[in-house]
Image (tube, rainbow, N blue to C red; front, side, top):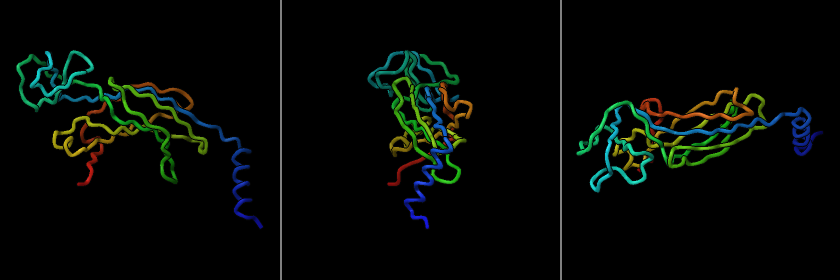
Length: 181
């Protein structure tokens, strides 16, 4: 008769004996918010401006519905870096909860780097989850809401490196999460 310890040893031996290989991923990305409703303001930040010092470039960006300022501007599809936003790496499981592998915060220019690995599954599907403030209204920002975006990484990048720019900006494509008061 087998005991629980014997069962665990058999499973571990089978796992090692079958030689499941570890599958790894390295992700090097940049997170950006894009929208047709952005206005590029060409000018300096002033005391009464809604912008904060430390913009990633000489072009300052704001949602088009925030009002008018005495600077020149052009209206077009625009993108800006999403700084200080959380990006997480997961491995999708078919029969149990997905495995959290790693997380990081984006840099000032929206850059992030994550690595992770999975050794129990031979058919690994990695994905990224970003918690961000792209296209939030002022009311949603005040309520500490975040949009949650998911990006599935193609399996051809398993055991390799995946580099990309992640353009976020479709408000109905993301999940909106707001803390309950």
